[in-house]
Image 1 (cartoon, rainbow, N blue to C red):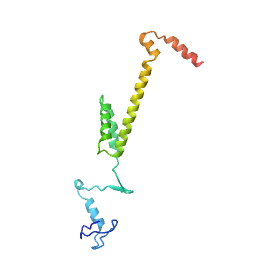
Image 2: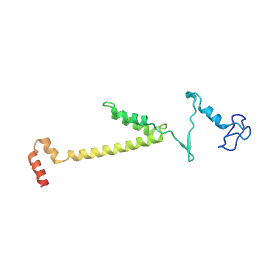
Image 3: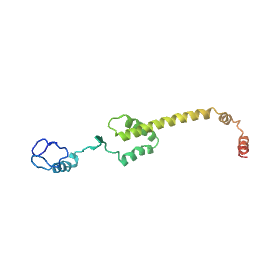
Length: 148
């Protein structure tokens, strides 16, 4: 660490005072932190040797889901933003991972929906309903017999 008063190198990074001139490091840090809001220096939080990123705020998460409330195109905007959040570098890691999980979940749900629709479309009952030859009374009676 370098002393802002005398300019000398201090060997201890956790020192509160300069070893040479006795100047307080805490006062210099407070002065740098309490500058005007547009000049405020953001100091990264270090935990276990790793820099901890700023958490995604509640309103940011709420706004992400609020995209779905846009009439008609909300789902499309939300899906597009999931791709943007998944693959851009300036997105926080927690939101990037959340977006990737949502994309995978959406892909799995679409695949299951397509498989379900294929099964329904190939059923004999649907063909009979579409042709007008389906007998509802026989179907209802067969359900009642299954309950007995």
